[in-house]
Image (tube, rainbow, N blue to C red):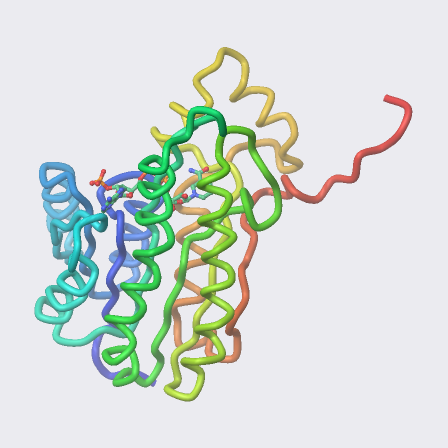
Length: 256
Ligand code: NDP
């Protein structure tokens, strides 16, 4: 369908899930630009992929800075020559009980996770329109859209917002041939997740409630992203795929 290598911008590719997405898409021949704030980490990912024969351009961008989303999309199009896919993965999940949560805390999470999704989609849409299979994939979460976690009110609101934005844009951008979907991870083992679940025994007890018997890996999420980003997924739009090893499925059964 496409004669050129498909081009993709991944936000938050310096570590964790985003790094897994960059690595998988690079291994499957996509041409990648990825962002983050940590220049050393970004250049390390770039160098590792180059040594393995894959290509990825690191672009430093703090998504909380005014104009950064538009600047990032413009820099990615300059580096890649086109844009077929936007994957917005960058996100933060600092634990803050409601009583301690300041307006600045709220804005930090909403700006990074949700407002940047709107701004990136707005900047990317004209470029995606020029693709014969334009794709937006948002990394959402089970937390917010399906479940709640104490201390993450801002995060749950941001990820619920992502799902609403995704459905509205799926309708609005369908006419230009761009699909808009989400991947909703369950519990994925990254350094930041390990920090959130630092309390002794918590990682083990969370693992026990996941039917497949393990936490997810960044590559589990990347596999779903790869499919939604592909030309093959052209009849899927406005959907969020839960990738959680069945964590949200079990019913509570009585007498125990
Ligand atoms: P990490 O903390 O490991 O990675 C977050 C990424 O986002 C980093 O690359 C970081 O880059 C980037 N980032 C954070 N803030 C900014 C900012 N202001 N500007 C630009 N980039 C930024 O998180 P995870 O990999 O665990 O999570 C990735 C995504 O997946 C998030 O959206 C998260 O909500 C979602 N998710 C994760 C789950 C999990 O279990 N891990 C479960 C459900 C959803 P840098 O440090 O270079 O700035």
